[in-house]
Amino acid sequence: MGRKVHPIGFRLKSIREWNTRWYAEGSQYRNQLHEDFAIREMINKEMPAAGISQLEIERFPNQVQVTIHTAKPGIVIGRKGASVKHLRGQLRDLTGKAIKLEVEEISQPDADARLIAENIAGQLSRRISHSRAMKKAAQQAMRAGVEGIRIEVSGRLGGAEMARNEKLSEGRVPRSTIRADLDYGFAEALTTFGQIGIKVWIYRGEILPQRTTTEVYVSE
Image (cartoon, rainbow, N blue to C red; front, side, top):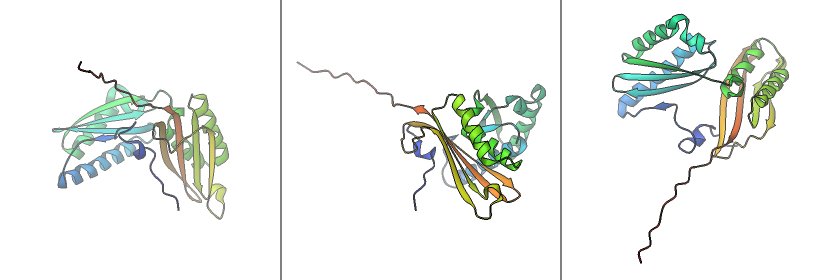
């Protein structure tokens, strides 16, 4: 059996940073970790149609800052900021701390791995052919300017008796290269035949490390 490494965790502290940034020890670490899970679950449950791709959480003394990366910032903000105020109040009741919410718009949703996976999952739930949904998503991503895309779906595709795995690749997707700027997304589609898993890899190019030049002084 092959060993599978998460594409984002594989690149942490080389070209990627953590989505959650804080430090704690002992039981405080455990409590804050479960609190982060609850924050993410609440936001995704309250705004399922907002096209949320990523949530960043930072902690300060008596304050939690949450940054929402979304393709539809209007749904997150709401009319005159009503949705943001309501969400901020719910998170304040959950954590017992001051909440600072920031909303950042995703300019190219067709080139975001998480949003592509959720889009394919929605089409599969509406009984659209998986091959058609995969080809359309790959074509839109390539038109958006990515260098490569890989889509993998697993489950009882088309209502087959036996589950299988199908893949589609366009361009180049170097999954084992650490300097490769690789975005990864996962979603599940609930169909009448069971759950179907969708994995998406997006390759945007290479991020080369910055070289620092040091001056060497030679004493005469």
